[in-house]
Amino acid sequence: MLKGKTAVITGAARGIGREIAFRFAEQGADVAAIYSGSRDAAEELCEKIRALGRKASSYRCDVSNPDDVKETIVRIRSDFDGIDILVNNAGITKDLLIPQMKEEDFDRVLNVNLKGAFHMIRQTYMIFARKRAGRIINISSVSGLIGGAGQANYSAAKAGLIGLTKSVARELAGRNVTCNAIAPGLIDTSMTREMNQQAKEHILETIPMKRIGQAGDVANLALFLASDLSGYITGEVIRVDGGLCM
Ligand SMILES: NC(=O)c1ccc[n+]([C@@H]2O[C@H](COP(=O)([O-])OP(=O)(O)OC[C@H]3O[C@@H](n4cnc5c(N)ncnc54)[C@H](O)[C@@H]3O)[C@@H](O)[C@H]2O)c1
Image (cartoon, rainbow, N blue to C red; front, top):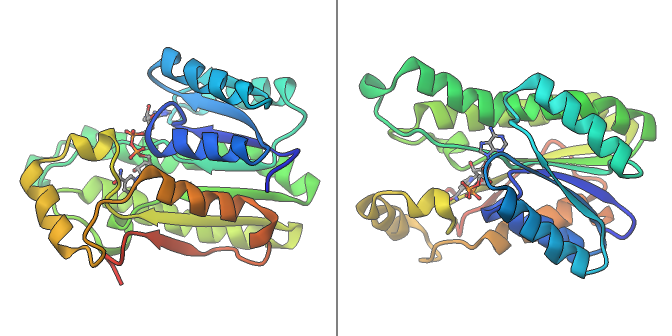
């Protein structure tokens, strides 16, 4: 499905990003894996991808730092033939009720989850526009659709990401570049493993499908949105949530 394409994926060393990177590679894509923390985990992923016969390199980059992003895209462009797919997956949570939430925690979550995607898109925009082809996929959240108690910063960032998605979709539609958002519900990754067990059980009760989602559930949709099969879909937000928010 992605033969001959190059995908740039942020937050690729683990969780949903890792699953997307591997799924894309299985379908023929070369992968530029952006990570912020564990070089070993990112390199291990790249090894697995190279074992599939695909090209893969890892890049340490804090997506909230515009200079870091600019430099990383320059490096990726010199290492790969071009960029066909961008997945803005990097994200963090700093959950607290508003009276306890520090302004710096609000800013940090916005800077990584929302501005990080903006910086990545800004540095790749003209690559896609000139090529008159491309796929941009932003990993939002159901929290951006319905809010989340204790998640004012995260929900604001993820809702902002939906506005960003639609604006980018409009700006680049005439250039045959699509931009869509995925809104996962509760997915089994380190992010949710850190959650309070009681809160998790409460959410589980409200999921019509009665199970937590897997990173692969999200990766399958990302694969479709990255492929030629989704060529007439843009500015869309698709939930992967077992029916949680319908
Ligand atoms: N797990 C869920 O239930 C769930 C639900 C909805 C949305 N999401 C979103 O899915 C995405 C992936 O999350 P996950 O569940 O795999 O969690 P995760 O914590 O395993 O992955 C997040 C990744 O982002 C990276 N990252 C964090 N800050 C970064 C920065 N400044 N620069 C570059 N990379 C950075 C981390 O190193 C990590 O690899 C996130 O955007 C998250 O908000 C997750």
